[in-house]
Amino acid sequence: MNKVEPIRETRDIEAMKRALTGRNKLMFVMGVSFGLRISDLLALKIGDLRGKDFFIIGEEKTKKKRKITLSDTVKEEIAKLDGADTDYMFQSRQGGPDGQSKPISRVQAYRILNDGAKRADILDKIGSIGCHSLRKTFGYQIHKKGVDITRLMAIFGHSSPEITLAYIGITDDEIGDAYLMIEV
Image (cartoon, rainbow, N blue to C red; front, side):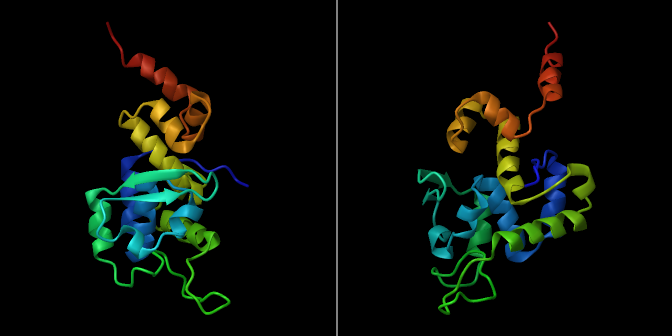
């Protein structure tokens, strides 16, 4: 498995949003906004979010419940969606074995993200991108906006600040730069 990094620059996030359209763009926006694992994101149905200010999800991997508040941007995008409440947010064109609907696969989500990064011309700059890049981008961006590392640890379920800092891609250089911000 290749290691993926967060998207660090706001302009690169905006470039990705411009490179994607429709539900592909919504998948990117929600992934960066919620910090969910891709398996949890793809399992969401329209009715889980439509007309709501927040939702509670039972995470597949940890089995923990998590409350996620929807930003105005996400609510606006969800309000534009066509489909029944029982439809997956990111519905596959292929039906399941029993004829039921199913979400797109992790592989398809990976393809969407990589195609978007290529169109946005950021792939070489950010390095490898994958489904987990959305979750890491969420963590990096909210840490950059001042969210305490202990809150991030709780969100991600990590046992130490060092694990969380490494996970969101905070490097020794960035920690060193923090010291340069103080002039007394």
